[in-house]
Every structure is written in structure tokens, then in C-alpha cells.
Length: 106
Image 1 (cartoon, helix red, strand yellow):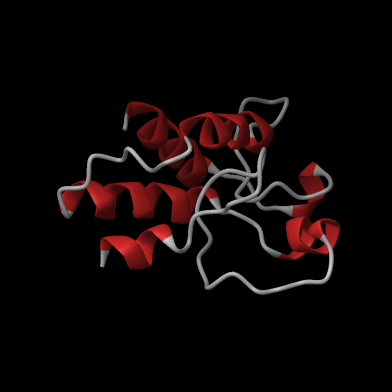
Image 2 (cartoon, rainbow, N blue to C red):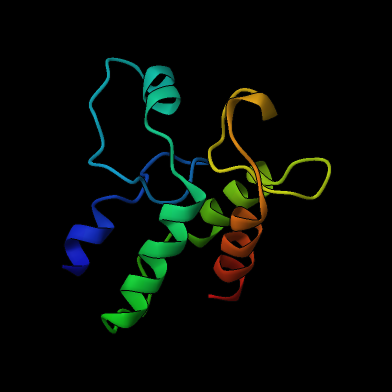
């Protein structure tokens, strides 16, 4: 199960976090980044599941996840759920603030 959860982790540098679906193959890294989006809620859930399963999180790319958290935070302090091209590409509300706080704690 742990290996399965890690299979949802983004391998792209600067695009950290976990997908909510199996990663799809695209012809270019640009298309890959646009269409395979790590999601803040999926990242939170993946980390919690790994902890529940006794994983030490040593395989998590912490620097990339931290970078994603910075990208997910909007100028007003709220958080969106995916990287997107602009803040209009993603919903934002208090659920994602909770996810961000929990990810930082973990």
C-alpha cells in the first residue's frame, strides 16, 4: 500500500506533491506539468495515510512539497488546490488552508 501511495507522488522538480489519480503519460514535460497536477488535498491525505501505515516519509521530496505550498498560496493568504496558470484556474477556500497547515506540521 505504501508503494502504491508513493506512485502518486509527482516526480517533476518544482512540482511537488501527490496526484489524486495515476499519472498520465504525455509527449512533453510542459504538457505533463499542465495535465498532471499535484493537489493540495491529495498531498495532505497521502502524507497522513503514509504516517498511519508507519512510513517515515523519508521518500517524500520535502523541498518540492514546500515549493508547491508557496505556489498554492495566493496573495490574500488563502490557498488554491493546484498550481494552475493563474489564481482563476483553481478554487480556494478554508479547506486548503487546513491542508496547508497540516502538511507543514507533518
